[in-house]
Length: 428
Image (cartoon, rainbow, N blue to C red; front, side):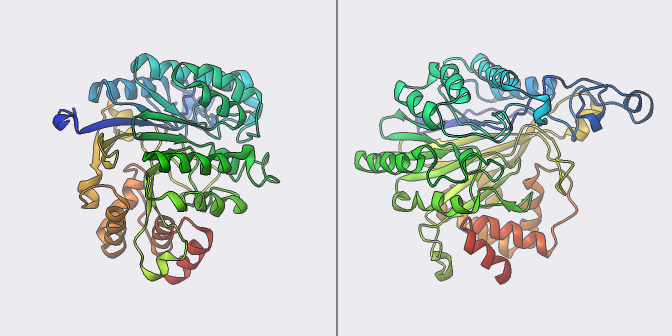
């Protein structure tokens, strides 16, 4: 199914692409054993169970065929988006014994070159992911080998000031156009599997820098987008908080004074499709005060299923955001997918529109108030909740959503703050 964008009315509306969690496995092989991450052909995969398709496998990371197909489809949809947001996690899901610094840098280099090759001269705003490191998930305060090398790699599309802060902490800010700023944060500092920053209150001074940057943006009358890899709040797929306890609420409080200039947040990491409401005060929900912010989590390209956790895989997903280039407000997004099960059977990758956000959520736009109305619809209409849960794993067949599932889905949307989430589980 082709879906081309021809309706940029008087150039008031434009599109930007979000690329996240590609996890391309350069050693994926056709016929590979899915229990060996599709990286080697075994007796079982050759003679008994059957090996992996060249297209992909739900137990493995992204094949070259799937990766190439996704970029060809993105270009076919929109050859010249305004810019690209790229929130990291390029290497495959491998143990540290199978990785090293060279392989990590090569993965990031490969993806950098791929994006620039398919989208030449298009501005790119990247963020670092927890798998973009060695050992996996372990990123400390810079300068270090990772920040130094990646800063050099990304220097063609980052300013000198951005390169300096990236070398220190993997974060930066860029003025996209007059009155419009993007802030890219290194949220891996706070990630629950990162042990490098446990004894630090503000790793690399990122939150202090964030406050100063937002204060300056406020005085300059700018609108701000926040991007990062790991989102705050509760991970409904893996049933845990993404951040260490001491960081989750502090991170969220950092935005409280500036919600009137922050349009929204974009994250990846969870491989799922969801959103989170944000309140300046974590107690505001008690009085049914409307949220002041919104966070969107885009699903991954990789279909990989964590075999050690009770979580479903997902179908490969791609997302295109639509925004107003005058107000910089988020208007809509288009979520695309491909049915990997069907692809394997037919031998062809068929990308298609899964849903359009404003149509599914029944909203005029994607503002915090509109998404609060979307939340209330999901909460009150069972069929909407079931469909939302289905989209959560990019239309991968689920076993339904029981009462526990319902609580976790709803509470993770409305309560990114720690205390509010725990209280919500009891209330609903």
